[in-house]
Image (tube, rainbow, N blue to C red; front, side):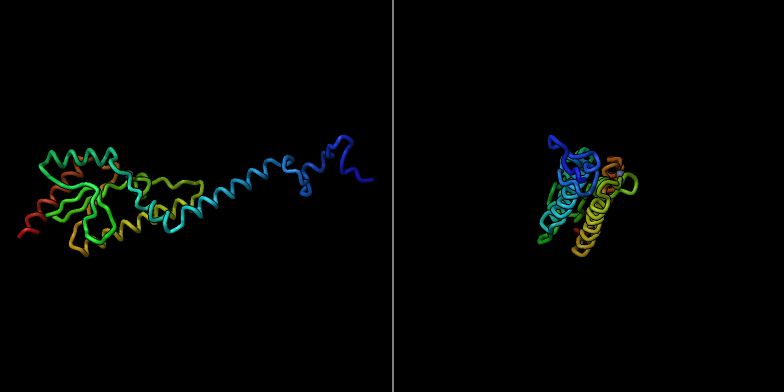
Length: 184
Ligand SMILES: [Zn+2]
């Protein structure tokens, strides 16, 4: 004799854990897991559209602490420069600090977004998504450097974690050297 439903509308306990249970309230864990998968794949899909990818890869955080103190240090060393400019006409890549006459472009790279070898943290959740994103940024950085070089520029990359005085001195040496040769 089947007892699919007990008097009063309650299902027998066995049915609550069977795959045939149709009442979603009976299996909240399964429902939550499915919802999470849907959210993840929706995010993954959303984040990898060409438009979003372009926007995210351009998402250089402006005016970070490193960038500001680097600008101060360079200014104190007597340099004048432009900030957040596209150094090469027609090339849609924006540098953080640009020395026009010397043709030096400086990029301050965030440790997470650009995969710093010392501080890169590769998130475990949605690992493939983040790895793809960070590696795409790295490929773009390499491509930017290549294109700048081809256009006669020097690209200098500074990690977010670097000591700004040291970085400023490194940049300064290149700028002075190139300014004299570029004008000659
Ligand atoms: Zn770092």
